[in-house]
Image (cartoon, rainbow over all chains, first blue to last red):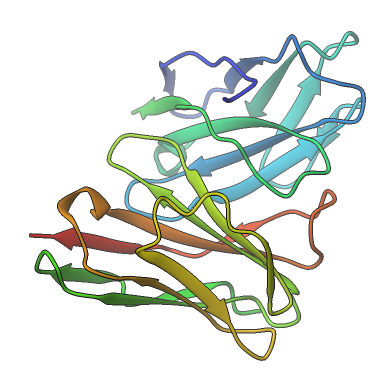
Length: 109
Length: 115
């Protein structure tokens, strides 16, 4: 079973920051938090991952709380093309990615 | 560089027929993964290859499903005697190393419809 809990859906206005929360209260010390997204009818796209520290790349920022029990993915300036299902995944050294249902993010003009 | 590619992109078949799905991983990636995604669901792990070996086949839903990988590159997922419940999107991913924390990169998927 997935070790994460995410809201089923969220809306965000175009140009604003989209903040997607994820709860992972049972995360272990060696487990990473990964984020992928899946745009309609496409394969999942890797976004970002982190262990303890906050991370930033060209797509997004990942904020992990100090106790590591939750995290937030931030898309700083959302566009209509960011409409997708966003998956938060907790992963250890096991090769399997265990997927939940994700958050359906809708960017509105 | 080129990403993971899969073929065909769509496949419609009749119940009872066999199908073959192909995956070309990113060049140089030693690990390859197959997942299945039913409509509106998250991904379900099927099988993992490290090189040409499959250390874990536990996710294959039945003995009608098999997969092979040759030359440490291309992989084929075969479904024999297809059933309607096999209808799904079949996704392939690859990573530069096996297991560990290597990021998996996905292909566009093959949409299989069994009539």
